[in-house]
Image: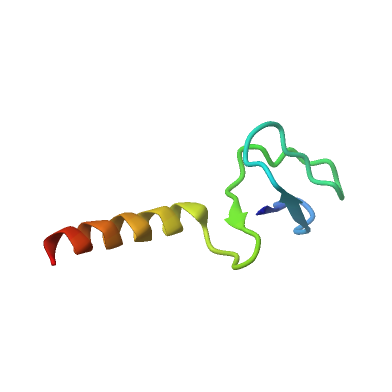
Length: 62
């Protein structure tokens, strides 16, 4: 589950897909290009991927 926060009305929007057009259900603002987060922890998805990649590199050198 993914979450985006509308920069116009600041309301949250949720989706099970990160692809396709994403409109704010409250005000209709286009959120397609906005940054998305894991809905359960509000962590930026790219931060999670970077952390996993760092952990994998660390395991190689141990």
